[in-house]
Image (cartoon, rainbow, N blue to C red; front, side):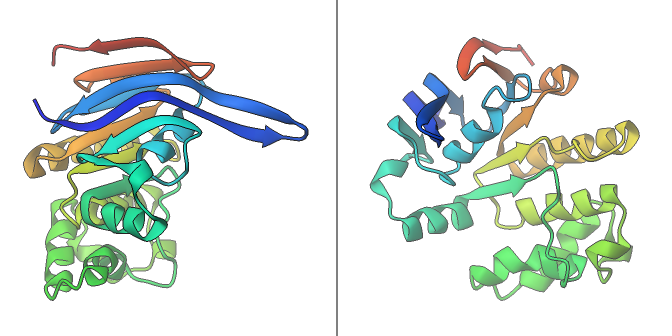
Length: 228
């Protein structure tokens, strides 16, 4: 299988007053193309920091990350932004929709940034897939939390990403709504052939993926395939 994400001897620390606080210690793992992959661990274990590093949103201290066959350390900030825009999708716990844009405009933005002339039509198609064709002209403030996250899902898949990173995608949703969002996420992922990397503290969600990486205290404590 082709590796889409490969981390070798990754380390990350932050300045905390006069001390350095090490968040991640010698992290090594790989994700195969089209695999569903979960990063699990308790709060403060370094999960979200790790996800940001994988996506090139932050700089590592030591080690190397290869994303879509490209070493992130070799790229400038503009090149990193271009890589994310072309090959990466994101779903966040707090939706991160633009409040002054309607649902369809939020989904169309990444496409318009790519110069896609069919941005509006594709945005309509994606909103239909997530069951929101009747809400496409509503603003985020007019949508429920579950509806906002479904708009965020449509936006995440809009640029046909090779890999999608989801950070606690149901963290702000009730259990029933969260289940619907996760079902949609996996359905879209399978349909579009995307690699899915989910950060979660929910082991039931993690068990739905093919590969689970568990971290505690910034160290890998388990790395196993689930057999799904």
